[in-house]
Length: 280
Image 1 (tube, rainbow, N blue to C red):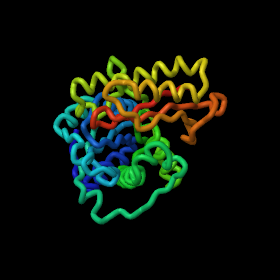
Image 2 (image 1 turned 180 degrees about the vertical axis):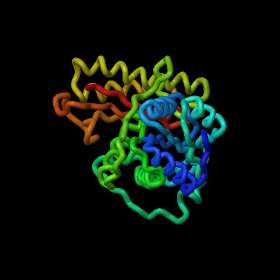
Image 3 (image 1 turned 90 degrees about the horizontal axis):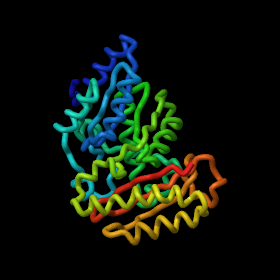
């Protein structure tokens, strides 16, 4: 496994691979990696000749500068995990490499980016599109891998790829959970033991809501989840929405769509956690 720090050096390496007709898979990350990220890498290694991972904490997608400062940075441990997964190249640029000048591009993928995370984190998805497009330009992979835990982000990246006509196949990978059900997240390492225990109520409530939804309406299911989270110790619900899996717009009945997702964001102490569940 080789660490690469500049776009020019990365492209030089990947050009050699392309001359050998090797396919390239890519998984962008912000580091603080866990087995969820590892699952993306392993899938890429299995489906491509070469796998590239990036580790870059992107400042333009943080609307809360304190969140940016507190984001875990664990490059040594990240590289150990990536090497174990069989990654070939790790791209580790600094901010000046990715943003030699201010990126003033505006991406508008309404209504996908105007609901849920888009409504609560203004500018977040614009920053995501800025950095992912820059990384795609640098790597130009055949396939790129993203976790379904960030379901809304995945939908927006797919739309950006269509809009910018990138010849890249976007692969969504299932949520990886701890044995007790908690969705793996880089932010979990910021949870105290008590907060970690409280956070279990998020996934447990989502799992229960699937059974509940079988004989209750969408609105009743919404209220069941909201009430359960609001009554749980140490949790503060930011939002819970039941949406069409393609448009991300709220639905009123289970018959409205063939793909229906429940998307949730909860503060557990100071840590903001997201999760989702597929109803059908």
